[in-house]
Length: 374
Image: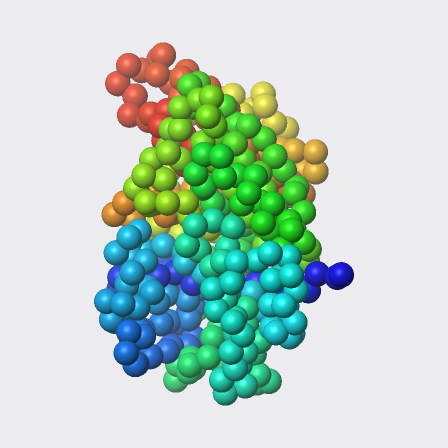
């Protein structure tokens, strides 16, 4: 049986304040609000705003009733990624196909106003996948509406000339409990036909994490999944599991075609990034023959560089502003590379150790390293 083709529709975040969350994305990352939805009804009252930049569509949803799923989610986790929605030309057929492959069913297909939706469980805790089939013409300002009930905003705010150029969602990074890595990734391979593209045990000092990446058949979404290794200390991913209260998404990676310029623009808009010790760049000159961006540009911006069999990549991670420190973002530029910067975990560890040896009062700690390179 051929597995139904599914494309990414949008990523939905459940938040405690939808307007504040939308402003953080518009002011900081250059997203535009292009549609909104106000829902009423017993236990279902909510407010949602749909945002887009490039080909990235995010929905921020606030539960206005204590029993709404968004309110339940945020009471447990705080703001976070709740739904990675997928489009299908025929949701009923895609749903039946996935169920035949032992998908977890959360909501059967339902139709309203020409829309057909269904909901499946994801491969990690309480994240879910909503299947979306849109009626013809379901757009706002030239962008597909994410879900039924959304209405276009009357007028788009203009995009400033210096807005960050974020083009697409490069990957979704996930942490699961120890021993759950295989089951989580197998779920996507079995149910949705994803293929494994990368697998590694990443070790730095006494800490380690098992990792595996799986990519959709059409290549428009990749999950990089991490789990604590039983033979090492759990480190920061163990901290995530404790603070989040379960497995889940800990960051989204946004692609750009010019990372140095994009990071400069994000900095001007108030986005703060993790710093990188000078010793990292001292070693980088001998580690890589850079094919784009100079060592001086990378050092000045705090951007990391790595290389694999297919090429190079450049990446940087934001400082989390989440009260529980469980959600942050990555900016990445790929020059052919197909992996996710695993070499930076080791390089950063060595750089921090070297800096500690030189400066006993160094403020950068080993515990911060994995948040930079996953």
